[in-house]
Each structure stands twice: as C-alpha cells, then as structure tokens.
Image 1 (cartoon, rainbow, N blue to C red):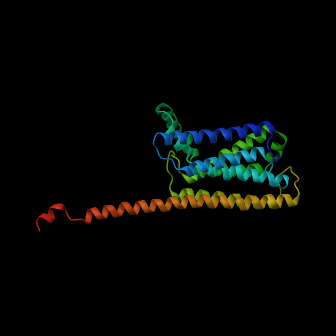
Image 2: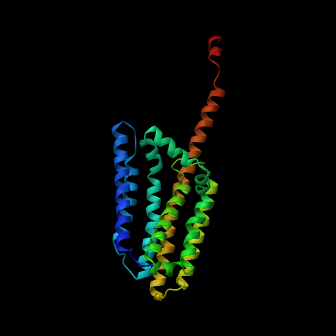
Image 3: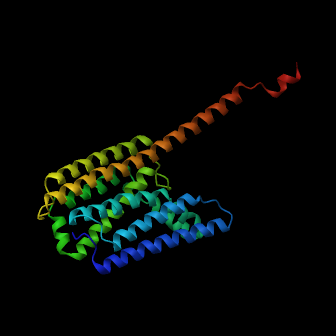
Length: 271
C-alpha cells in the first residue's frame, strides 16, 4: 500500500473527517445552548481525533515508505479512534436527535448484530485479526496495486479500531455494559497480538513486498512502541472507570449502613 492514499480518496477521507468534526461541535453547541451540560474536554478529544485523520489523509509522513504507512496505521486505527471514543459521540447523538430519530438509533444499538460486534472479544478479533491478515498475507501487496482495495483496507482499519476503542472504553451506551474483567482481558489479548505482529514485521516484511531492512525495522518499532502508548491510555481509561465504580459502590454501602444503624426517630422521644 502506498504511504499516502490515492488523491481522490484522500480528499474524500479528509472531507468526512472535517464534516464529522464540524457536526460534533455544532451538536455540542446546541446542547449547551438549551442548558445541557457537555464537558469541553470531549470537544477537544473529538476535534483532535478528526484533525489527526485529516493530517494523515492529506500529508505524507516522514521516513521510508513502510514507516510512513505504519504512522498512518497508528493514527487511523489506534490514536484517532481512541480520541473519538473518549468524546462519546453516540451519547451526544442520542441527546441531540429528535425523539423519532432517537428511537431508530436506539433500535440499531439494541439489535443483535450490534450486540455481537460490541463484545470486547469480538471487537479485538476484528481489529487485530484484520491487521494480521493485512500484514502476513499477500493482501498488503494487492492493496498497493489496487487503489479501491487500499481504500477498503483503510476503512476497515479505522472502523475496527473505533469499534475496539468504544467496546473497551464503554463510555457510550452499548447493548450490554461489559464489566472490567472482559474488557481488560480483550485489551491485554489485543495488545499482545499487536506486539507479536510488530516483532514479526521487524524480521520479515509483508509477503510480496521488498522494503529495505532499515525501513522495516523502523516501522516495526513504531508499531510496537506506538501501539503500547495507545493501549496504555486505554488501560488507564478502564482503570479510572473501575476506580470510580468502586467509589460509588462504597458510597452506596456507607449510606445503607448509616440508615440501618441510625436509631428510629421515635426512640429519641421516649428518652
């Protein structure tokens, strides 16, 4: 695959990213104008994710051809999806839509296909499994020769990365809110598979390609350490949720204990 997208496809991708960012910001502004609270940090996350997608769509990353491609992979499939997931776009959409459209979206979110895809393990397989298929089969070389296939690959990498980030972060309303253990397990498994894939690329490039050894090693290191950085951020998000949930549970238990231990009001009258 070329280090930059085909000209027309790059413009379309940049247009979608800009349009999505503008739609998000306008929805957040309307929400605040009607008196609802929406933290500005979420605007910053979504705007940053959209900006990164525009940069990789229109720019040419530094380094060799495979290193430049790997920088695109990290942004398109990991960093930008994480920022978008942290912005809670589904929550914003549900709060912004009129009642009829909101019911339609809720129906889609509660459908059986969505329930299956939103499982952390399934999302992890689609995300990292797709990368193994891309880099360890002739698919990468085929996409390099066929622009339409390269576009499909980019779309899958972004969509699978976004699905995985949403499923692991679990900030938006999902058909089923999975606990910390299955989400952490999916993150650990996906992180391990991603790291192993990076190590294999250090030694051997994708079948059908002939990248220089220095380019391969630089790309593999970028994939390995860049992936670690994004995965650590995901782990922090999961850990903060676990900490907050524990605090809420302790608060409920303390309030319940206080109610059971406090004497009845009538007891003080008889003293």
